[in-house]
Image (cartoon, rainbow, N blue to C red; front, side, top):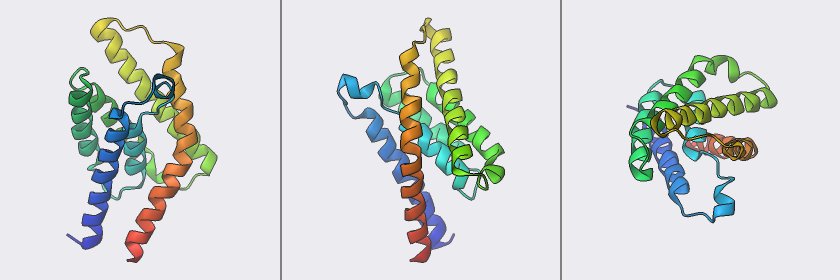
Length: 162
């Protein structure tokens, strides 16, 4: 394997581990209400821009880790993240060439789908009734996505040039 490929894999894993730390960080209750699904944002990014399809396996593995660390139903995050990765991979070639706003709208659709999958699993498991507040992180993610994409694009470009 090439050095660039190893660095890319390392960046994928480190970024998702950082996202898990952001998810587990004890935020104040008012801020936690706005917290986006960090891992889903990164899985969407890596599914869109990674040169391989192994991101689905990474999504499942980190989804299980997230389930264990959060004490949620085992497989809930794994399933939603694999579905997210699949949907992004399916249309990645077309979406890399679209405008910023179209990509942002698609990211919001994918993250909404992720919320629906997790809410459905919670409803089936223990009759959780979704609240309108469950959608607030979607709008926070729409605000964070451009900055996250810019940061990761810059890191990848600097890694390629070094």
